Length: 159
Image 1 (cartoon, one colour):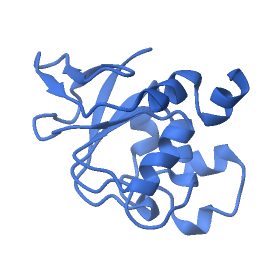
Image 2 (cartoon, rainbow, N blue to C red):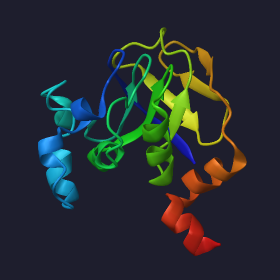
Image 3 (cartoon, helix red, strand yellow):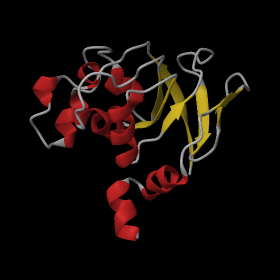
């Protein structure tokens, strides 16, 4: 599965509370979650992510609480994948479980608006704007299978 979209650039320590504030986590309505995704960090996020985007960040993306709504809000908003130098481990696993690809890599050369391309399971992220190939930390084969299935529930249904 090949993903291609523009980059939306953010910094370090993007917490789950910045991704989706706790006051909005009382609902199972995905549209409600989407409407508030990243609003405390970037009030124009929803408009920017329309049509698909890669979120690009620095270190410690998804830190804070273990709220499962954070990766759901991003994926449902149109985020195709997240590239960051590092991820909070619980956020990492929650994202993989819902089929949202996470790319652990050096993001320092990626600018806001760059067009990125990633083949799920690949160990490289291609910046189509600059031509640079960025090494991505390899994923275990089980995680690749989960991503390609669309999440852990779909994976188990197939097995």
